Length: 283
Ligand SMILES: Nc1ncnc2c1ncn2[C@@H]1O[C@H](COP(=O)(O)OP(=O)(O)OP(=O)(O)O)[C@@H](O)[C@H]1O
Ligand SMILES: [Mg+2]
Image (cartoon, rainbow, N blue to C red; front, side):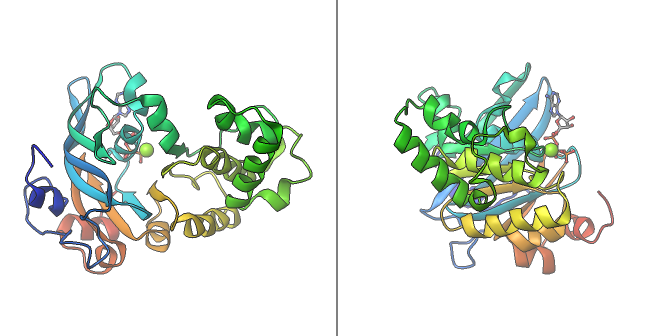
């Protein structure tokens, strides 16, 4: 871990406080050999504006990490940085390091297409392609060069089952995905992301456009997927963060204020700003 002392990266704060949220893996908070994504003084700028400010944290492999914080604090910016979705934004640049599986995501050796296959993303608004259910899920595998019908059928079925959607759509695989309900569309987008066998699933407010029943299905699904994938979810809903995540990061004005086990962060926050936010005093 170059450029920043290990202990600093482990605190999960911008060097301002040594609250050492992350001392080893004992509390399930993750700075150990299993760290899957590590930010080291990582910043994201839009032109000269620093939207994510020298964030240092280590997200362990598997399990669910929630990112919370008021609107505009940099949650989506940080999430999108992990699969380089910000690359297309003019004037956007980064500093510091963001490491995935020991490789700097912004280093010269990274293959962005391969990165995005390993780091899938699900957005706030379900965005199925105007294609059949089957073709939506087969899209990624086909891009990767798969053409065999039997193999594609197997992947589509497995992915739809993983996304808890197969039973609802197995008789309409040939119909346009736009005809599915919003909650089904979102699970389809999750199936589409899973079809290329990613290691990380980024979810940016995946249930904010859904009704409570569809939300609950997605939350159940996250619980099912948590052992297999590293899930990083941005949510405005603190009850949701408390329900689905193992660890929570609280961002405020681009700064990582606190990162730790979800239960502890919501019941005994270490920082007064976290307490103010979770008790609804601002944001
Ligand atoms: N494409 C962009 N160009 C310029 N500035 C941007 C761009 N995207 C985001 N920003 C700015 O960066 C800051 C962080 O935005 P971001 O979308 O990451 O916040 P957020 O925490 O996800 O907010 P919300 O909860 O409202 O989705 C904001 O000040 C925002 O205006
Ligand atoms: Mg956002």
